[in-house]
Length: 78
Image (cartoon, rainbow, N blue to C red; front, side, top):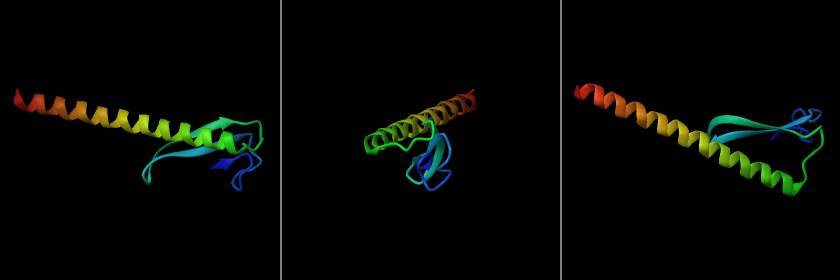
């Protein structure tokens, strides 16, 4: 985590979390916090949202890859 209340960019008005699947980065989530540190419950919620967002991004990428593979297979048959 970086941004408000963290050792990295602690004076920032935003809090940032990486979106990862395993160790692979798929994006970042930023939440405006007006420079206030998040409490424990807020951090848990933000981490849960980040996990859900990363999973959704990964599923969308996998679906796009599957569609591309299907289209290529159809093209090769014709």
